Length: 183
Ligand code: PAN
Ligand code: ZN
Image (cartoon, rainbow, N blue to C red; front, top):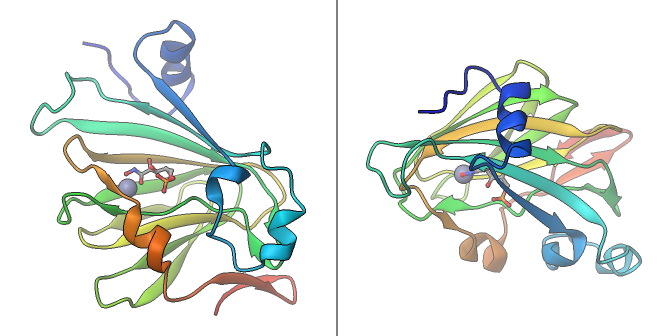
């Protein structure tokens, strides 16, 4: 068994050695429809990298009780008055929860429950966030440098992107006079 002690070099070294860390990336083009300001969006290059996710499951896929570990690196930038952000999702298995914690940079974790109540938590190095089952989650980079955060979620959680892609969150995080506000 490979062991990950902390989200550190050892994790990335596994990736460098090709030992099971899966890397995925999302460009701005793949985030079509999530930003409000379509004019501002259309002026940005579709192939610009928005974020990368490194994920790792120290078990065979689908192993009950297994936990994924992941690191997301979200680049800084804005589309109109909205910050670069992740697509956001509910889990496919609704009751599956997740931990996020901040490693580097500044951001906001945007959360929405099944009644479409939306709230946000500030992310910074060392901040810890529990995302209960049935709560959609998305992260925005509110700073000028890369926002990096770690995540841990059940191997059988799955991702349901469709609902957020279709209906969005009930509030948007926008910059107002230099500070992030939910609107
Ligand atoms: C995270 C997210 C990751 C990227 O690992 O998948 O931050 O965000 P999107 O999946 O919304 O594009 C997680 O929440 N896993 O369950
Ligand atoms: Zn998740």
